[in-house]
Image (tube, one colour):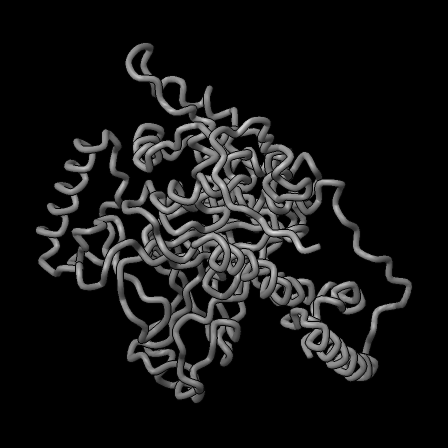
Length: 505
């Protein structure tokens, strides 16, 4: 006999247990098991008075901020609108069906009252938990930066003389401090964007994502990711016009403070392969797997500095023609010493057309600590460095991609630099929490490989077999209505055959 449900609103709701309404394998249950949000009460205790209106529990506020980015909810107003409909959210917050939902302004007031420190502590605790769970190997550290669109339109940018722009920055910073009681940490003294400012968000300078791209207000997130499981161990938020290589050493020091030691190797793209970074990292005992910076393109017939041999005993260089280059006064700004030939030496040299076009003759720059720089360059050209940079393509970029696709990383929710730091710390903490959840029963070990490393022509043969297997997986997945976007994931267990380098088919 077919039944029919009669829709009728109950006058009373007795015995509704949210703990039974939320399934046992719900992700928020795992978050609740892994993360202790109660630390925030002690962290922000000095931000509240001893009398007056009773505030919303700081633990609830922090959980609401967590949910905002966990599911990438469009806005704080939207979060409060959907909160009564989401039993899993209510359970996670410790609310009942009849509890009053806080107003959305509670979150903005808490940010202004707490500042960025409380959210940074949440990120640091997530790193500590990952270290305790042995999810951080500290062998290979990936570093990179990514631009973030500010919550300001390109049309809001105004142009004026540098003095007026500097004055406007001071006025906006002082006004915000009066309104919200927070110190503005806008960057001062930057040469870039000295004539441009967005009154909507004065801390976000104009920056381009690539040459010829649109210039608009942006921030930049610098991130360090451990290679083992992708744990984010350090993050720095800066204005968008800050060079990525300028924050590499700061990321390394933050990683050491958060993890408890320096990594064995550091890998990054060519933007980080500067002389300063090679020198500093080698001096600290960290192998440099950064791709060398290409620098300015020189004419094809001009000899490079590698053609000149340095003699430490006489502190001179020998050119390809056998002539000597002698040191001049050191350049403290460039942190280097220029070596030059005697006057008239290049005029009578037969190799001059292939060596230099300068009227006074050829010069060579030798940077301070050149021995360390040369050692770093040698490490960057090694086979382990090439394999590390291949892994970076999916480990480092994958971290940014997950943040952008799932947690709203590429667009600022709020304005001003200190709020953007809050956003970056929460998103990085969420990524680490996901790694903790995925490895809650202990880190997953790679399948044992009993076959020796594939070398030579065998790689081509294996690639052909892998292509056929992937085609079969795609056909089976599509016929079953599944997701066939990444069938090559099935072959990750075979990476050790290729020296931990993914096989590109």
